[in-house]
Amino acid sequence: MNGTTYGYIRVSSKDQNEDRQRIAMHDAGVDEQHIFMDKQSGKDFDRPGWRRVLRKIKPGDTLIVKSIDRLGRNYDEILDQWRFITKEKQAHIVVLDMPLLDTRQGRDLTGTLIADIVLQLLSYVAQTEREFIKQRQAEGIAAAKLRGVHLGRKPMERPDTFCTVYDEWAKGEISARSAAKRLQISHPTFLRWSKESGSDGTLCVPPSGSLDCST
Image 1 (cartoon, rainbow, N blue to C red):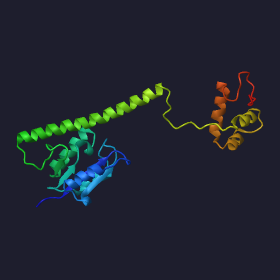
Image 2: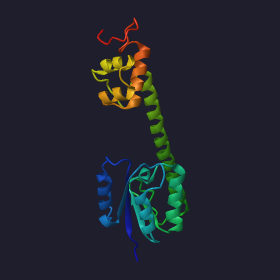
Image 3: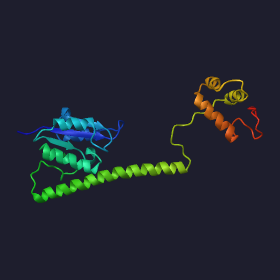
């Protein structure tokens, strides 16, 4: 009796399109009801779709993925999951983009050895690519910082009335909380802006030290 064929799809983020993988599953004869999907990073196998398909798989079933990196990008965990499915679950795995990785085919010792080598090589490449991506991201952030590019949230702009309100606060005519309320900002933000204004001499404090905001 033939087992059930399942398909597993993974994309790294919610805005990525899984259509190519889904079409490949249909072309391979996988019923839509037997396709499981995660929109999640491949750094580990703690994914709801993956856990569901593992619960479904029985001896003699087949799991199809489009490419080895759709399983994940962690070298050791890919090998562990592969062995769990093929050895403990006694099920088959097919990687569509790599015909050598098709455990349905009866293999002699040489064929099995080649498949194992290919699996380990591709798993290593998947993890290495993930590490390179992280390294390039870190280098890009560092380079942007050196160029003075601000990568965080854009700083809030001071309203035109800030200097007037700041002047009143500096003269003791209003409290800091009242000033913040008039400017429609938080109390800590007003205190931070006031400290910056008094320290760098470029906002409301002219070089003479006067608090007149009209200059």
